[in-house]
Image (cartoon, rainbow, N blue to C red):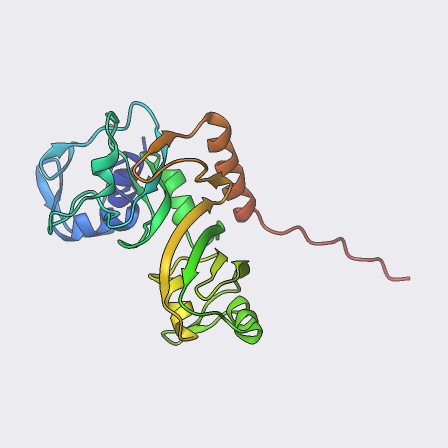
Length: 254
C-alpha cells in the first residue's frame, strides 16, 4: 500500500475529518512508529506503520457507518467539549463504531447532521468544490422587504467577501416570519450574519436537508442509519459536482 499523508490516513480510518486531523498533528497527538509527528506533510503506510492518536493504535474501520442525526439546540458538534456541554457524540447510544460529524451546526442551531467513519465521503461533502446544497428553515425578527429578499438571493458582503447566490423563500408571513434558505457554501454563522446584514436577528434555525438527504421525521436527539440507496445518492451527487461540464460541440464553418 503506498504512503499517504497522515491527515488523509486519519480521515479514512474514521478518526476525524482532515481538518481536525491536521489540528491533531500540529498538537503533537499523533505518533508514527513511536515518534511524535507534527509536520502536516508527513506520510505513512497504515498497513506497515504503527500510527497512534493519543496513544491509541489506529486501524482501518471494519464497517463503514453513515448516520443522520437530528441535532438538538444547545448541543455541541464536536467529539468532546472542555466546558462539559452535551455533544452530538453523547446522543449516539448503541453505535460501536467510531464516527465523527460531517461539518457542523452552531450550538444554538438544530437539525440534520451527518456522521460517518467514511473519510473520503465526508471530505467530499465538506469540500468547497462539491457545493452540496443545504436547506434550512429560519425564523427571524421582522420581515425582509422585497428588495432585501432579492439582495439576499444575489449574495451579501460578509467580512469583505460576498456570499454566493442563495435560495430564499417566504414560508409563513408574520411579524416574525419563517423563511426557507438554501446555501451552496458553509461559512461560520453564515445565515445569522446574512440576516443580521439587513438588521434582523435569527430566532430559530433548523437544517432540514443536505444534498439528497432529508431530516424527515427524526425528533431532536434521534438518529438513524442511512440506507444503501441514500449513500449511493450522496456519492452520485458528489460525483456530479466534480464532473467537468460538457461543452457543446463547435459548429463547423460554412
